[in-house]
Amino acid sequence: MENAIKKAIEGWYSPVDRATKRPISVLQLRKQWRVAVLDPLFWKALGKAEEWSEYAVCRKHGKSDCYRVNCFEGYAAEWLYHQHNFIDHIASGGSIDDFFNELLAGKE
Image (cartoon, rainbow, N blue to C red; front, side, top):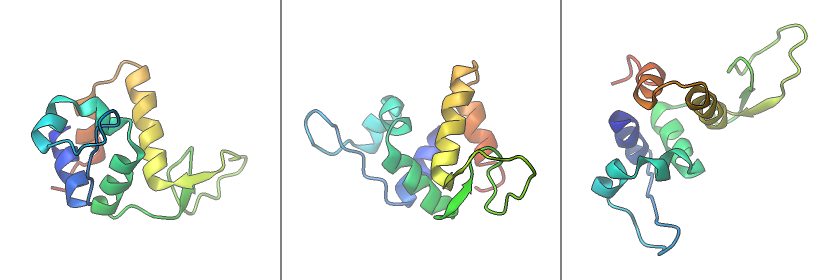
């Protein structure tokens, strides 16, 4: 998670406390990581830092050129694809660190 936060900040993520409308410091963000993972701006900034596609990717297979037969999942921005995979991963009992370690593997 720590690396994902760093990458998102590199991608110009500026977290804001929704209640007070004040900026959240990096130190606070590390303690309150739930703020980031639920914020679409976190995922967009992470995508910018990771150079994910700004255009649509298959929501099921994560590819911009998905021509699989019977794939009717539709398309979404790549950051949204990864955010949905994160939610599915957590809902099925996976760990946050495992998700981000795999997502960002080899990109440090």
